[in-house]
Structure formats: structure tokens, C-alpha cells
Amino acid sequence: MGKPVVSMKNVTYAYEDKIVLDHINFEIPQGSLMGLTGPNGGGKTTLIKLLLGILKPDEGTINIYEEPVSKFKGRSKIGFVSQKANSFNRGFPATVFEVVSTGLTAKIGYFKFMNKKHKEKILHAIDQVGMSEYTYQNIGNLSGGQQQRVFIARALVSDPELLILDEPTVGIDYENVRRFYDLLHQLHEKRNITLLLVTHDTGIMTEHATDIVCLNKTLHFHGKPEEYHSLSEKELSNFYGYPVHVVEHNH
Amino acid sequence: MLADFFQYDFLRYTFLTGLLIGIIAPLLGTFIVVRRLSLIADALSHVTLAGISFGLMLEKLLVISFSPLLGGMIFSVIGSILIERLRSVYKAYQEIAIPIILSGGVGLSVIFIALANGFNNDLFNYLFGSVSAVSRSDFLMIVTISIFVVFMVTIFYKELFTLSFDEEHATVSGLHSKTIHLLFIVLTALVIAASIRIVGVLLVSALMTLPVAAAMRIAKGFKQMIGLSILFGELAIIIGLISGYYLNIPPGGTIVMVSILILLISIGMKRLKFFKAVKAREIK
Image (cartoon, rainbow over all chains, first blue to last red; front, side, top):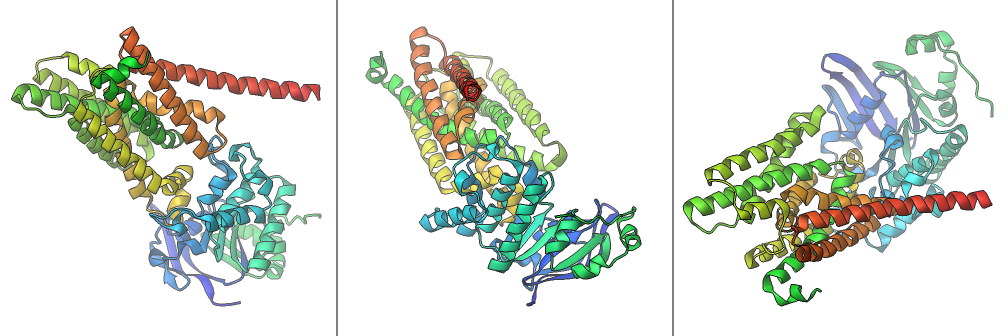
């Protein structure tokens, strides 16, 4: 494991006077596939927004590649697939190619046009997520799982070193969730991308993650999947705030 | 039938102006529709009316030559910036900016009209459009606006598209969303001011949205939608202008009705396609 891609020190954030994150400390080591989990309202999405600079912490510091988020210039190093990707305007008339191309806009920069090289990059990203045959199809005509792949392609097209996925599998059927994790696995192994995956579905996530973080206002757990599995149901229930039963996924 | 349009200078200006706004109105309209901002066009057109009335009032009271169109353009651009300010003040109720600006525009217009001692024929032309009202200086101003708008949309196409598709993602990826959005609104204001001579204040938003609504039913992608919108817009303007001229009806009315016809045809075509697909499947 290399130096940390992200490091959070003493980060606190409150909406009005409701504290959502309370003195959070953690690092995402380079090359890890970190699973971030926790109950609803536990501050997962807030944490992501802080990381991306959409929100500013009330206290503490957040560094990305050892630079404060607010001053971080290499935005294209970060790929982001938001929760909203599942609920975008389905009537929007755009082809898969056009949607993926938006991932390059900021990287190409102002006053510059897309060239052949960029187009190849876009096609490559679409190919990587296995959507080549739909390149010029309208995004609205695709299934939820297929759209998800397109959004991942959009995040990949700028060659990110860190890919953040916020609840990417909500509303997607089991078969596609499996394919999705296979894809993540491939990206992680082959391209050595650091991944931060926010999800409820700890079962399948723990099979793939190298590190797991559990968040419910404070950091409740930070460790390896083996350690996570050894947590008792009681400890998990304490952390989630309601009874948790560990269910084995059968594959 | 077209001969008149090439014979008389004023008709030629009208015709060429029509062709220009047939490009820029649907071009900007495509972004307006997909961003669900259709009503902003309406609000801005009413602010433009205030500017035009202001210009007419100055002309009448001070007996100076002042281009009402220039007045309209200035008011429209100021209105667009005000709408953005209001939208950021009422973050949770952004649409409230529209009635505020719209009624403000009409209110000001009424005051200016009253101060100028009432309606005149000119104002009627601004409300519903006219085939004979485009002067040489209007024409030159509209040419300049059109070139500027097309140039800016070409330069900033990828940013405008990215912002329209997913504003949050655009911001996170490092785009200056607010600046680009402001640029977009100002361009919209300019297009509205330019279009008013032909289609009129009350119908200008129709020219920005109806061709797009028709294209949306058919287009596979965004660029294709822009192309189709412009095609439909041009079609509506050419047919609308010529028929308006020969029937002696303000072209705003005929252009909008042709646009609605095109819209109905595109809806019908899609239905037909759908039924054909269902039948084909049944036969299989």
C-alpha cells in the first residue's frame, strides 16, 4: 500500500445544529478498495460530498493527494458515480457516447474542442464497461443496470486514480450487481485504481473490499474484511442502532 | 410566391431575419427545454417588452431616435441576471423567480406605455410580430447577435451540454457551473430580444420550445435533436412568414400554429412507429 490518496483529520460536519459527522479520522491508502458502510443518515453521503468539495467541513482537514480539497486542482484524477445516477432524467435525449463524453469536458478544458484521441478514449471507456453495442443508443432506452455501466464509463473516461461510487447498486437486480462487482474487481486489479465504494449491501461488498469502514456519525469500525466478519451480531447491532442478523449470501 | 420577399427591401430583411432566428431560437431552446427552464424564456420576453416600451417612450417623449430593440436587449440581459440572483435567494423555490420577473416586466411596460400616452401600432407589432417591421438597423443588430450566439454556443458546446445533462457532476468535475449558466442565460436573453421583431413578445418562447418538443420525440441523441429543432424552426418560420404575409396576419400567430402542426405530426409519427412495432411483434 502506498501513501494515502485521501486523509481526513478530525472532520466534523453539522447541518444546522445536527451533527452528522463527529471528529472523523481515516485514510484511504493508494490501491485499496475501500467499502464504506453504515445506516441511513449515518453520514455516508455527507462524507462523500466533503471529499468532493461540495460541502466544507466545520472542523478538521481533508487532503487529497496531500493537498487540501479546496485547493486541489487535479479534479480529473477523481471519478465519481453518484447515487443520483440512478434517478437522472430518463427522457434526456442523449446517446451513450454523448453521456460518456461529459466525463471529459473538464479535462479537455475551455476553448478546446474534442479531437480524435478523445473520441477513442470515450469509445474505450464504453468498451471497458461492456456497452460497445449501445454506443449510439439513447440512454433513456437502456435498463437500470446498463445505465449504471454508462455512468461508470463516464467516470472512467478521464482516467481517474480514485473512483468514488455512492450506492451504485441501488435499484439494480442481483445478476447485474454481480456483473458490476466483477467490473470493479477488474478495474481495481488491472488499472490499479483506488476505489471508495459506499453501500448498504455489506454482504457482497465484503467479498471484494480490501478495507472496510463503518460510519454512523463517528467511525465505528475500520479494518480488514476478516476483522469485520469476526464482529458479533451484537456489535453490529450496536453500531447500526437496530438488530442486525448476519446473512450469508449463497453463490 | 416568394418573389415579393426578394423584391422589397423590408420583406427581404424580414425573411433573412426569420432565417437567422430560426437557427438561434431552437439552438438555445434545446438547452432551455432539457434543463426545464422553458418558463424563463417567457419571463425574459416580458422584460424585453418593458425595454421596448421604454425605448418607445423615450422616442415619443424626447423626440430622439432610440432603437426600442436595443432597449429590449438591455432590459432582457439585466432581467436574466436578476432571475439568477433571485434563483439563488430562493434556493428551494427557484421557479418563484419567474413570476416575479414576468410580472415586473409587464408592470414596467404598462407604466412606460402610459407615460408615453398609450398604445400605438408599433407596440402591437412588438407583441405579435410583424412581416414589415424589420428595419436595416434592426437587421444588422440581429445579424450581430446571431453570429455572437452561434459562436459562443460552438465554443462552449461541451460545457453547456455537460451542465445540462448533470449539473452536480459538472461542478464536481471542476467546471465553473455558475459562470457557464450565467453565460447561457445571457445568450438566451439576447436570442429573445432578437426574435421579438418577427414572432412578438407573447410568442417568442414558443419558437424556442415547440420545435424542440417536436424534435425530442424523434431524436436519438442531443446533437441530432439540435439539428432537428433548427430544421423544424426554419420550416415553421418560412411557412409562417409567407402565409402571414399573404393572409395579412401577424407572423407570430402563423409561425406558432405551424410549429404546433409540426409537433402534432411528430407525436403522430412516433405513435405510428410504436403501433407498427407492436404489430410486427405480434406477427412474429
